[in-house]
Image 1 (cartoon, helix red, strand yellow):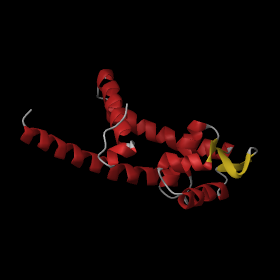
Image 2 (cartoon, rainbow, N blue to C red):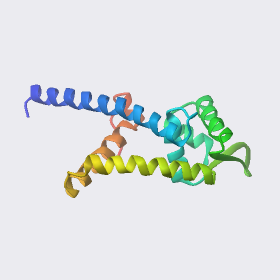
Image 3 (tube, rainbow, N blue to C red):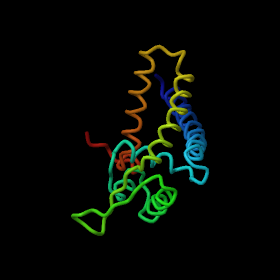
Amino acid sequence: MSAESGEEALLAVEREVALMFRRGRARVAELSRRVHPELEGMAYSMLGYVEQAGRVRVTDVGVHFAVGKATVSRQIRALEELGLVAREADPLDRRAAFVSLTEDGRRRFLTARDVRMQRVREVLGGWSPEDVVRFAELLHRFNDVIGDPSAERGEPSVE
């Protein structure tokens, strides 16, 4: 691959990733509203993380989403006020708290996720199973790199 075609390919990747992110933000906002009409866009993703974790420290939610303490606290408080999550003090550290989905929160999240998964099935339905597996592997690899703070600073990644 020539340097010029390599640069063109990188520009194409950047454009496609930017488009995917813009569309993804809009879809996540729509899914959040499907869970509850009063939810902000990030709430669906947070519910998904909590659902997957089962029970997680509020600070770990913030770390996972790379948001500050004030932002995660506000989001969790909104989810709590809507009855979608329950917060409990950490018995080993009273300053910390755990959060988990309530039954209503789990039901609403899973219903919205089912809608999302149906859309994924429709979009990728014409792809071969091998292409879907390869796409998942490449997305995972990309997300690993993009999630590495050293990559943001241009430092070599440690593997």
